[in-house]
Image (cartoon, rainbow over all chains, first blue to last red; front, side, top):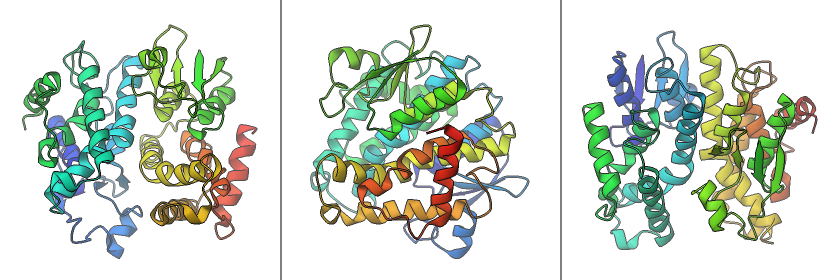
Length: 192
Length: 192
């Protein structure tokens, strides 16, 4: 498998971490978003959405969208709960991550760390919704060690990616002790 | 099952269409987003994200996020491809829908139809990305009748929801013949 990814992107790193955790061999092809390497004709032929991560599977077929790649790689592994309801809750977190977490936590971090904005220059709505997403994680961790029960699932892999980098966007996690303990727990489980 | 949904929302209607297609009985609980009925303490106790659709399954347990609900309801049905790669491509479309289609096509339509903006008053970036998403569908339909091969899957159910309403936001589908034919095909398959 070849993983086309940008090492500064949590969406890309989560694919790497999942492959590493599952012992799936791969070649990492560093693909620089800031240099528009996802917009070349060659790249667009592989992923018309022009986004990383994208993978070329062992049989030569392409696949994109970080969480879809995670689900494909982890099929049949213990990163996906066997119980149908637990699996559905994991999927709920994965879709929520892309709609209500990444567009705020990751976007603010990108603007601050890579576009050189001061945290005070970022659109307040983005910061507010980022904190809202972090609070939702804090609440979601009230009764369990991981997001879906007591074992690591793809929900944790996916959501830790940008949460563990949130401080780079100026987010202060001091008021979110469960989130901080969970980040350490997931990092340990993934060996990162 | 109880479905909490707003009848003006494509995200909610796709849950209804999937349940209807699969013959799953349900009670529809109309929940008005514009009247903030998703922000009451009762609603937030069920779905802390404060979003519709949300369902209460037959055993009383809640589930949210439209595409996670679709995947749960359709498990084991022919709306999910049996082939692992086809299933992964379906998931790729589902995640892409929430990240790169809904935030543009649905948001523009909401602003025009329900907030009373003229199409010319909508932020041009949103319209441009909406057309980009529609073009991506047109390209995705170049070699097949449905988004994943020759049979209806959840990818079609999910993506048709706001695409069939795009004209309400001022999007003109005249230049997208494959998308228009696909909408008719999916509508027929769903009986809507």
